[in-house]
Length: 152
Image 1 (cartoon, rainbow, N blue to C red):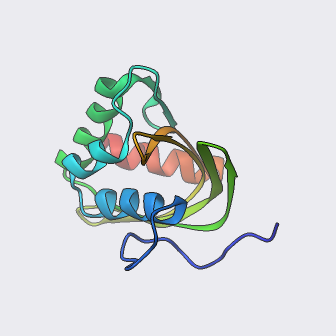
Image 2 (image 1 turned 90 degrees about the vertical axis):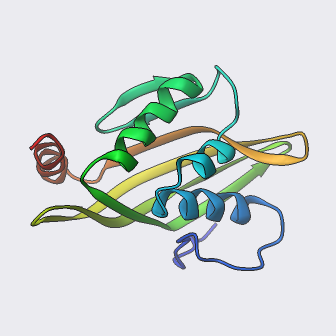
């Protein structure tokens, strides 16, 4: 399977209900800093999990929504888009494996982000819900720069 290079930004229009629409919904909510819309995208379950380079492993809705709340409520602006991805459907689940590119801006500091990303969605009650996300910063140097900028 050849990876798709056209980025999912959240600005896609007219997508049929399916994996691309679910992914676009997430990126629209994230890039719009819309906590309520992010919460709708994630399953309302204690079984969901997220692993990211700054927050570590978070389990359950409360822990995951707290991470997004800190991101959206902080002084930094983060924008990402999903590209170089493949989507794999298996029954009532799909997973997307690819990369995010974007930026972190806080005051005069701007960092170009490069993140390896996977997201897993499950179909429940006729709708796709995110149940897992894993993100890893592309290089150790970028990770160190990003961690310092977030902390500073």
